Image (cartoon, rainbow, N blue to C red; front, side):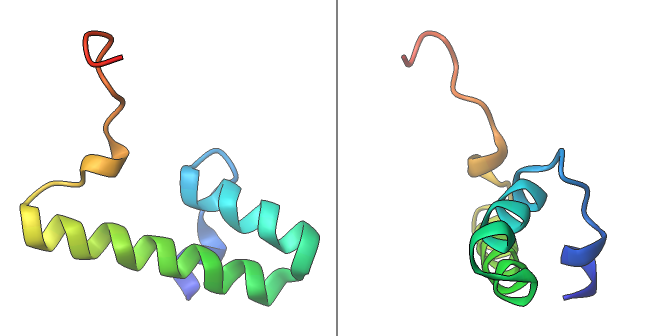
Amino acid sequence: MESIKRLGAHTRVGALRDRVAARRGGNIGAVAAARLQVEYVFYALRDGHVRALQRPSREAA
């Protein structure tokens, strides 16, 4: 939880935290962001890299 609160708003997880916190409150925003961060860690451990952090190539679009 501490890592979520230290993230800047320029990151994807930090932006989610701030968006949810504006609507539902700071603690709920932190929990939502922590869930996303745990999801990224799960896929990184399972696959060896985090595909969600990669931008799609122009050829795929």
